[in-house]
Image (tube, rainbow, N blue to C red; front, top):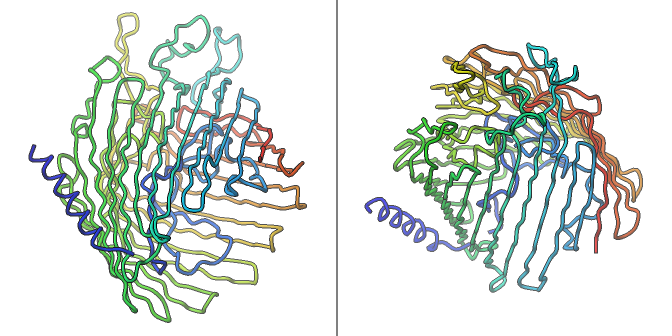
Length: 593
C-alpha cells in the first residue's frame, strides 16, 4: 500500500511540474514517442549513419544496433531493414495520406501483406489504420561450416540437416490525433503485435537432434509467441506557447507469451521547457511501473533468476539547461534514476553535450559527456533477441559515463563526412549465450546446449568505439553512403563480448534511373563475433550480405517491386545455432488509391 501511495504521489508531482509549463519550435524540442513502433534499438557502443544532408544541430552520436541483419523475415534491431520492409521504397508512399496496400511473395514460403488507410481526414483531426503481416513457412538448412560436427545422418538420407523455420508476425495500429486551438494536440493510439515462431536453431542434444522430421514428435519447447499490446494517450503543445512548452503522455504496455507469462508496464513521460531570449530550461520525468504475472514452475521454465523477477518502479529525472550563441550550442544536465523494488536505488550520470560551429554550413565539432539507465523488461529483451528463454529476465543496464567527440563536415559540394571516437563504461552489461539445460535420455542425465538463450553478465566493462561515414548525393538522382564502426571491449569475467561484432561496415546506393524506375544496392558486414558454447569460445563466421532491390511505377496507382537478399548465398548466423536463409527474394505489387 505504501508503494502504491508513493507511485501516485510521484506521478502527481511530475504532472504538476509539467502542467505548470506550457510551450516551441526552438533549438532543443524533444518530442518523444513512448513507443517507437516496430523499431527496437539496442543501445550500446555508438554507430553513425550517413545523412542525406548536413544537420549541424543534431550531432548526438547514433547508437549501435548489435545484430546481424540475418534471416530476412526476422525483425530485430538491425540497420538493414527486414525483407518485408526492405523492398525498394515505392516512389509514392503511404505518407501522402493515400490508401495503400501491398501484396508480395517469395521463396522460403514467404508472403507479405500490408494495408493502410486514413479513415478520417479532417482539418483538425484524423484517424489512421495500419495493418501488416509477414509469414515465412520454409525450411532452413544448418550450414556445416558453422559447426564442429557433421550435420548428416541416416535420418536425413545423407542430406544436410534442415529446420522448419516457421515465423509469422502480424501488426496493427489505430492512430487518432486532433488539434486544439491550433497550437495544442491531443493524440492516442492502440497497437498490437503478435509474433508466432518456432525455435528452429541447432540443438546440441544429438539424441533429439532430428526432432523436426515427420517421424519425430514436436515438443512444445520448439514453438513460442510474443504478444505486445499498447494503449497510449498524449497531450502536448505543438510549439512554444509564449515562453512555455509541455508534453505529457502515458502508455499501457502488455507483454505475454505462450507460457502464460505476462508483464504489465505503465510508462509515463512528462516534460516541460521554459525559454528566454538566451537560454532554455527543461525537465523530463520518465516512470516505469512494471508488474509481472508468472506461470507455475515447470520442467522447462524454472524461473531461477528470482532477483530480476520482482514488480518494481523505475523513475528517471532529467533536468537540463540549454544556451546557444553565434558559435554553437551547449546542453548541461544530469540524468538521475531511482529504483523501487528492483534495480539501482540511485544512479546519477551527467548529460552534457554541445556543438561548435567551425564554419557555417560547412563544419561542426561536437562532444558529449553523458550516461544512461536502461530498463530491460521482457518487452525490450525479446525485441532484441526473440529466442531468449522465457525464464530469463535481464537486469537493467547502467552506463555511468559515455564520452565521445567528433566532426561533421561537408568536404565537397555533395560529399558529407562524419567521424568520431569515444569510450564508455557500462555497469552490469549482458551478453547472450546458448542456454544449458539438463535432460534425461534413457535414464541418463545430460547437460546439453539448447536453441534458447541465457545471458551472462560483466560487472563493469569498458567499450572503445570509433566510426566514420561518407555520403555522396547528386540532386534527386543518386545517393550513396559508406559507414564503418569498430568496437573494442575491456572485460574481466568474460573472454569476449559474446555474439557482438567488433567490426561493422555498410554501403548503400539508391539510384533513380527514370521517374518511374528506382534501384537500390546494399552491402553489409559484421565480423569479430564469438559465441560461448559449452563453456568454450567459438568463433562465428563473418556475415556478408549483398542485396538488390527495384521498384517500377507501372501506373499512377500501381508499383511493381522486387528484392533479392543474400545474393552470394553466405552461410552466416543471426545468433549461434540460428542459420540464415540462403539466397532469397520477394516480389509483389503496391497499390495506391
